Image 1 (cartoon, rainbow, N blue to C red):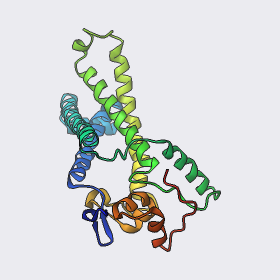
Image 2 (tube, rainbow, N blue to C red; image 1 turned 90 degrees about the vertical axis):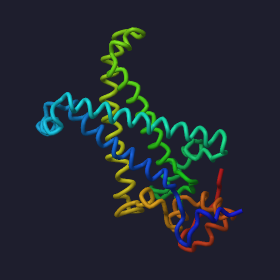
Image 3 (cartoon, rainbow, N blue to C red; image 1 turned 135 degrees about the vertical axis):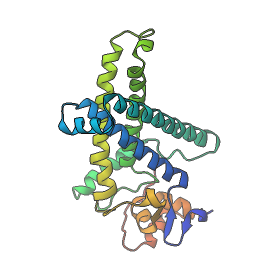
Image 4 (cartoon, helix red, strand yellow; image 1 turned 45 degrees about the horizontal axis):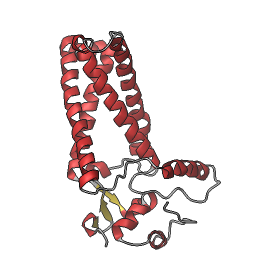
Length: 249
């Protein structure tokens, strides 16, 4: 049976209102954490000192950073809990789980970019790039949460763990923050704004909808599932896309 509730003419609902709000919440809290955190890490820079001054001093900068960290912890916890409940009890398709196909898709696309393959990889709801980015940011975020708590309560933590955990947590916390910032600044922003496939902006996470043409190009397996049709039929319906040797496994 086709999932017609998500299909409206040439538009397909890709994200729910909850996911849109969640994305805004993550985007805003991460932005505040980057500004308040990196300004402390690189405190010798003029721009860092200016930012700390505008926030009312280092104590206020740390207060804002820690409060925002609590908000980030709550958002991350809710995201994980909802995901577990959805997959375990509501039978959601675990679309973000990395599988063998993601690695073969990555190799396939490298060959496609080099002109060896005649078509790009055929992907489901999320492609390998989106999955690798998601898990990199999620695992990095969890590491930042754990190390942030250690740095916030060092005296309490050292009652149970050796004192060396504190400087180690400081290094991991600040360096991981920089890594996540670079992942988002370079990889995520490019794929969402500057990539020729979505330029000038991928609006799907803001509107919740994606065009059927993009679904045919980027997520044909999901589109076939939504419309309740064989993948081969979905592909051949669009005359501008020519896939060969269709495989879904």
